[in-house]
Image 1 (cartoon, helix red, strand yellow):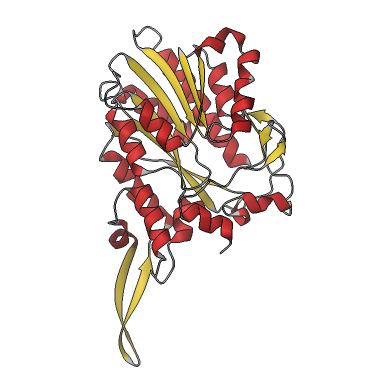
Image 2 (cartoon, rainbow, N blue to C red):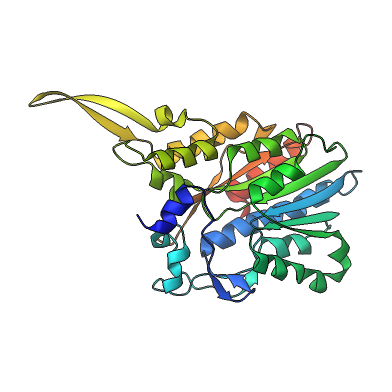
Length: 319
């Protein structure tokens, strides 16, 4: 396993989505990238429409916001692919320069009252700042926060801050396994934020679960941080007793991507008011599962409407 993956497992600096030009775009993804953003864009429009006559201050929060644009890898042999967490899963679907999540949020009508974009990279923060010139009518309501997404989000969601008059949508689109469970808990505790999250199903968790169950301690720690518990060890592995010509034997069985995804979705239900029952599996061109697009509603009173919109988009709302 290469040093880039080791760094990710240890929770170090996140591998970056590769760029097609300085401060312009990420080159990562394919049809699955478009699918997640189409779901997000439609939800944002439905969300602001539903709350149009409500007295809340409506916000959009984008962690790992990037540059505001997106584009896909054009060549699987591109040497820059070494920056990806698992380059063999990324696929090679060509794609032109398109809007990323930040730009889609800024284009949403009815508009949000506030926008918060979080990025660790100074260069990408500068690119996000440039959006203020393009969206002049929104410039005063755009905040760019440079820093670690977990720290910045937990600061925004601090219990001492009054969320009773605020509502928000938060989009968590990590590069790998950077999101920590205690960050997810902080989001849920506001009881005011609806969360869209890309859970690193095949591109992260499944790759760290060895067939034998003998997992390096650093990998186990990374999974503990992501899942918020060490109980996954019993959930993701089982021992089956079999009979052989040489007598009884034990065989370790590893969880499937389906059971991993179901486990994480059940974890979300322990902290959020409501969770979409059927998160969408995002696959590459070879049909390998990359991420699980999950939705959780933060406010119990608004959850029925939020779930109705999200479920529609996750199951049949995107053509």
